[in-house]
Image (tube, rainbow, N blue to C red; front, side, top):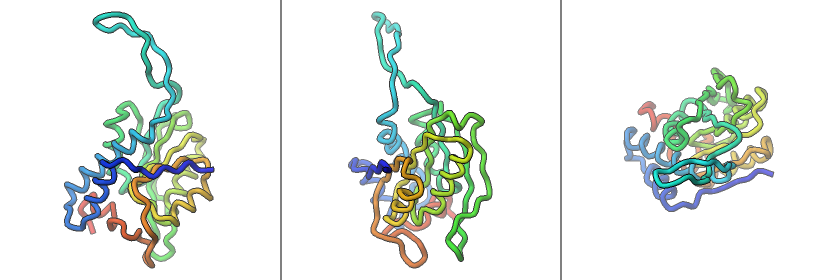
Length: 209
């Protein structure tokens, strides 16, 4: 069964509510999306394993804690997912970055792959797949399947806003993937946009229409 965490941190909720406003410009929108990603990464990495290490402080020798086990990677779903990468790298600067390019066919609403470039050792890493919006779930499901086809087993999915339809599809298609969601919205409209949502995240991040 999928682990699903809806973020209830006040800072995350405040920032998401702020960027929903249609008057927020691209520069500010982009900066706050990155801040939200950092805060979400903090929550999504809470259960990473630690190991004991001996270090020497300026005062004495001690046993402390450091991350152990698998290395990490961030894989944004292009193009909107790029807006979340820097925020996560601020928290995990040693993570490698892959890219998966998918776009939604305007007639069928199905994902179409156009690019995939991953770290060579991606199958050995804990992978954070990021996309600001989880609408129908088509792109997310396809991206995660691409990773699994390449041997990746440890996957977490982070999105800022999700629709119930997308969450249900992810639970059905990839029940082994943990979902970290900033806000769960009401539904999808007839154009498959999240309601109330925030519009097209890619357009708002990059200033395009």
